[in-house]
Image (cartoon, rainbow, N blue to C red; front, side, top):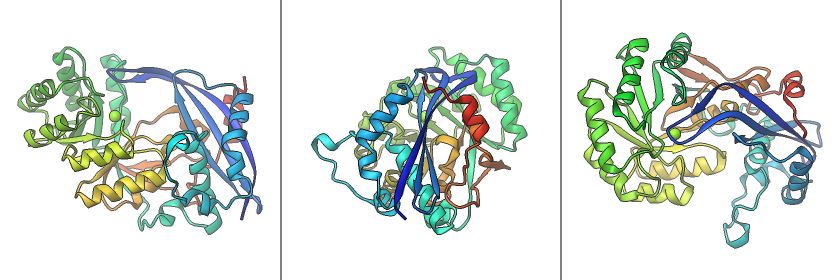
Length: 358
Ligand SMILES: [Mg+2]
């Protein structure tokens, strides 16, 4: 069925506590919510997130969408449009408006058309994937951090990722102590430095965490994203942990990381099509993937459909207020909705409450 209409919403969500890491701090989420409707009246929903600073007003978002995206979508088949492989050349690179929202809405429409949950459409057999609680805690004090960890513990998580990268390594160690204090030592503990360190600093800190009795399941983005040789060195010289990176790299960068042996767990997130391509490539190198945060945890379908996704990230963010029924988590597993498409239906009252056209 062809796409015949669309609706666009501009949403502002205030975060109850700041989130962030050693490099950034956010207190707001600004979202564009896109609904694409086909000739049978089915609607696919997609989201585009902007952290921190406001998106342009709705009228401008709409004008941009109408100019850059709608001409290709209007009258198109979602199947052909979402699955199309384009040639990234010259001025067509990076020119799209709200590419993620468009892609997500089209996959949702495909699932609804075939009456299949998205993970099944993507080839998955079981709608379930291992998940870790991600505290995004760098700007929280120790008590707030402890409360976040307790929330995840209550929800049944046995794996968490916390932020490190403070100039004072004793701060990092104190946070790791709190993790063991709240969750016990029998867990998968990941740390994320968000590019705070050099290769040497990473070595020093990794050894210190290890020596202090904190096994680290993976270290995420310890050094700058394009230091491929540095990442290869870390993978070779840190036998007691894994290196997770790729979050900040596009497809080409991910390919180069794999070619240079600079990654133990490749970080994928965002668009389903490109993430599947990256996961396919990683499989060719025998490297598993980890799924980073996706808006409303829609990525649960992607993670559940991939053969080697070790973990999916869950930060328990305020965006789930927009969902009638958010993705559920039980005993450390994310459960993909069994409803057709991605299964995230909009809560119309919440959408109205948080809509900010201006
Ligand atoms: Mg990260």
